[in-house]
Amino acid sequence: MTDARTPPHHVDWESPQEWPTHPHAELAPPDDGRVRAPWTRVLAIGAAAFVLWFLLFAPTLQHNAQVSPVGTRRTVSLDITGPVAALSRALQLSHLVSITGRENRLPGGTVGLTTAGARPTVPAGGSRPGSGTRPGKGGTAPTTPPTVPPNPKLPTAANPLRVLIVGDSIGLDMGGPLQSDLAGTGVVNAALDARESTGLTRPDYFNWPAELTSDMKTAQPQVVVVMIGANDAQDFLGPPDVPYTSPQWNTLYAQRVAQFMQIAQSAGAAVVWVGMPPMQNPALNAQMSDVNAVVQREAAAAHPPVIFLSMDRALGTAQGGYTAFITNAAGQIVNVRAPDGTHLTSGGGQVVAQQVIGELQSLGYHIP
Image (cartoon, rainbow, N blue to C red):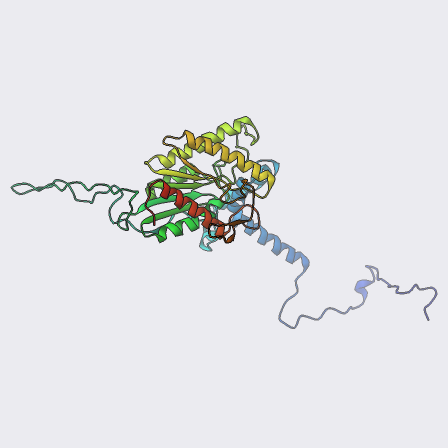
């Protein structure tokens, strides 16, 4: 029977003064060799590990903050990560991250320019080294006539058509299948440079004009295919900042697009600009319509004009709306959009790739 003076389940706690006056049972040590440590030590080890991780990956965190939308959150993130990233670079801690292959020197996607397909057997200029007049004993050696540059619209395995593909993450969705398809013809050398989370409004994060200039020198393309813009509907950094919804934004973005087209055309290459497809999110869809409209106007104004290839119906409904599935020419239903309603599936990338190849063929390029 329970004592009336003691409530049920009563625990007679010892005071701090009584506790050390007699021994208490302690937990038995683990039988698997582990050693128990005080919580203060565990907390200190965890804090030290976090500080080391922050130092190692501060440049990566700074990049992530730079690409985030303009606002208070971005400003605070840059204020925090900036000094730590500078210290990390000064101590060359980023080299340790590089050894593990987890560095973030460049945005995602392909790390630099990759090429596939036929390799030209003569220089891009069309003439072989050593041709021309060479003096010799007793007279002048016969002059070898310069080689006529090959016609890019009639490519061969020895003189393939050189194509450069550039873009953002959606451009990468398209660029992979397009590079593979072009390389598979045996008469095209296809180069691909596509980077996730990039665009033309944020050169502070990734400078596409500089990258394209470098790619043009390396690949010496005769055709440039561009698919970029998914990340461009955001403010331009100042000072002063130019809000996306302001009239000044359209003017500034048009200048960026025109500059990019001029670089692509600088060596006489034909340019095909693939528009952004319809988006599942209504707000993003409206933004991409704005981006496409600016690009289309600049493409028509370029000299010579840039080919603008709309994806509204190729990847959308008959009315140009969003759809995750389309019916191809063979009557097959193809899933063309990723679950996020933004990116392309491999099937969607293949659809766009064939649209680009068809456009090149209509321009007179003999691509099998």
